[in-house]
Every structure is written in C-alpha cells, then in structure tokens.
Amino acid sequence: MTTPLPFPRSRKNQSVKKESVRWKRFRNILGPGIVTGAADDDPSGIATYSQTGAQFGFGMLWTALYQIPLLIAVQETCARIGAVTGKGLAGVIKEHYSRKILIGAVLLVVTANTVNIGADLGAIAAAAQLVLPLPFAFFAVLAAVVILLLEVLVPYKTYVKFLKWLTLALLAYPVTALLVPQPWGEIFRATLLPHLTFDFSWLFIITGVFGTTISPYMFFWQASGEVEEEIAQHRLSQKGGRPRGVASFLRTMRTDTAVGMIVAELAQWFILLTAASVLFRNGITNITTAADAAQALEPLVQSFPHAGQIARSLFAIGIIGLGMLGIPVLAGSAAYALSEAFGWKEGLYQKFSKAKGFYGVIIVSTLIGLLLNFIGIDPIKALVFTAVFNGVASVPLLFLLAKMNAHPTLLGPYRGGRLSRMLVWLTFGIMALAAFGMFYALVSRFF
Image 1 (cartoon, rainbow, N blue to C red):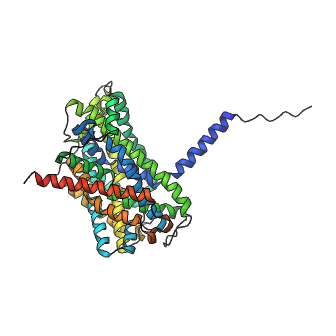
Image 2: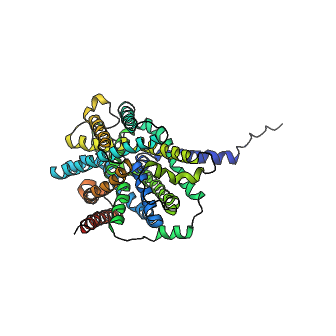
Image 3: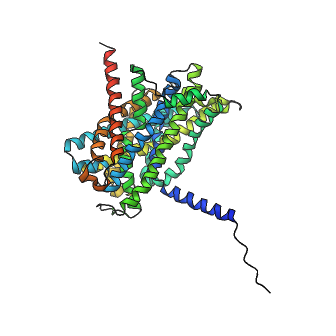
C-alpha cells in the first residue's frame, strides 16, 4: 500500500503569501519620508493649492510634475545628512559653520514654523466650524491643547498611526476630479507645458506653491527623523557618534523618501485639478473662507441630500487630520533646531523629564502660533501668506543645504552625486528667482 503524498500547497496561496511578505517588507521601509510627505500637504498646502487652482485654472498643474525631482533631491539630501552624521541639520551647521550662520538658520526655521503653526491651528478651527457652529476661539484652543497633550504624553509614532487614517480624506480630491467631466487633453498639456506670466499675482502664488511644497520645516524634520530612526534600529547610540550600517540604511531611506514625496505631489496635482475643475470653471477665483474651499468637493456628493454639508464635512476631516499630523512636525522641527543649537537633549523618543528644553520649544511655539489667531488675520489668507513666507525663508536654507550636500569632509563618500547637487542648486535658483521676482513686481507696482 502506497503512502499518499501530502496535498501540495496551492500555487495561489504561495503567490498570496509572497505578495504579503513583499508588502510587509515595503511597509516596513516607509518611515520619516512618508510622514514628511503626508505633512507636506498640511492645511497651508491645501489652501494654497486650492487658491491656485481657483485663480489660474489648469495653468499651474505643471508645478506638481516638475517639483517631483526637486523635492525628492532636497529631502533625500536632508535625510542623507542626518543618516550619515547622526545629527540633525542644526547640529551639523553648528559643527561645521559659523555661529552667525547657525543663528540665522535656526531663527528662519523657528519663525517660519511658528507662523505656520498659527495658520494651521486657525485652519483647523475654521474647518471645525463647518461641522459644528461653535466659536472659532473654542476650536483653536481645543486643537492646540489636544495636539500638545498628544505630542508631549504620547510617542509621536504611536498617534501618527491613527492620524494617517484621517488623511485618507484627501482621496476625495482625486475621486471628485475623476467624477467631473474633464478636458483631459488640455489637462495633460497643462501638466507637461509650464505656463509662465511673471506678473505680481503669478509670482506671489508660484512662490507660495513652491514654499508650501519645499518648506524649511521639512528640511529639519526629515534629517532629525532619520537620526531617530537609526536610534530605533540600534544603528546609533543615544550618546551620539557616527551611525553603523549607513549604506544599507540609505537604500531604504531613498525608497521611503521617494514614495513620500511622490505621494505629496500627486495630492497637490489632484487638489489643483479639482479646484480648477469645480471652482475656476464656475467663476469662483478667490477663496476667502473654508466654506469656499470646501465647495471644490461638492460634485463628489451631489447625488446625496445635503450635498454641501457632506462636502464641508469631508473638507473639515481632511484639514483637521492633516493639521494634527502637520503641527507636531512643525513644532518638532523647531524644537530639534533650537535644541541642537543650544546643546539640549532632544528627540521624540525622550521623556519630558529628560528633554524639558526640547518639549518646552514645542509648547511655546504652539502657544505663540495659537495667539497669532487672535490678531484679526483671516485663516485662509494666513495659510496662503504662510506658504509665501516659507518660499522666501527656504532660499537661504537651500543655499546652505546645497553647500552641505557637496561637502567632502562632512559626508565623505556619501556626499551628493552630480545629479543630486545639480537638482538642489536648481531648486535654490528657481525659488530665489521666484522670491526676487515677487518682491521686484511688488515694488514696481508703487514706483
């Protein structure tokens, strides 16, 4: 009697298992890059892209495409500097450059981040009012308190897992864009062929688009995020020093960074497209309130009763989720910069009692940002202004970043290659020209 052969495993089951292993491996690669990419589309980004689409129609779609290599190059450089040196950007600047440069860089990022925090808190409050008719001040204070408690008491990586689900509200933009009848030929031409005009309004908004995409807080956050990632993987002692296994770490870092930045740019493209399709096409060229911005999502829910309220609720969920994801990144990158400059203990892996200065910066910058909402600035205008401010503040920091990227002593064999150096310098040149052109056009209006 022959022994029956064991039942062979299904090829389908083996294939599914392999796919799940690949997905798990890919998911484990994603870290600071994907978080930074998600935080890049913060409320300031949504407002700026919505205003841009409403004002210029399809004319700015090309920015999302051509920013991809620039954004990846800049963020990969920041991540590589952190990964190779085991220090955040402020720590590297402190070690290799003069005190004046250090103070200037830190002041730029702290100022830009505090203004951005204020604008994002205002946006959360304005968005929440679309759902519940309670006072603006109540929602602004509530958001600030909740974010501070979460950031100080709960590890960022723990609560960010839940906040990422709220960012799925961004999917409403591509769905809306695909539901609305579109002139796809015109859209793809506008995506591939840049439309340039060089008047003040165009230069102002292009500075904002670049500023909300390539922002100072992202530089400092990603460099420090990679350091924390190395500590978590036991590649770097909490006491400092050069990390171990840099080459393998850089391979996964580059995948993480590229995925995060491409996702951020896809979100930008669809927000621009949706605003152009719905708002610009219907003669709404100036967004003054959160309700105006929410109108871009109304075609998604027109088949439901109370479509306007559903659209406003979707918009509110996206703004609140991205604000609560982005504000800790803003406050955290300011805290990294100041802590490294003054030699304080820093890191979100640290407990409050061991890093009081670090968490103190987070608390103070958030509270100052909150106070900015009570000086009479319109929340939506504040978001666009913040994007333009970031665009101007990024210019000197990009110059410094380009210098560090080519620094042979600082990075040794891991300094930027020819393409990386070229793209970072190109980013600096484009953003410097946009900011200079904006100021020149502004002065020309008065003389």
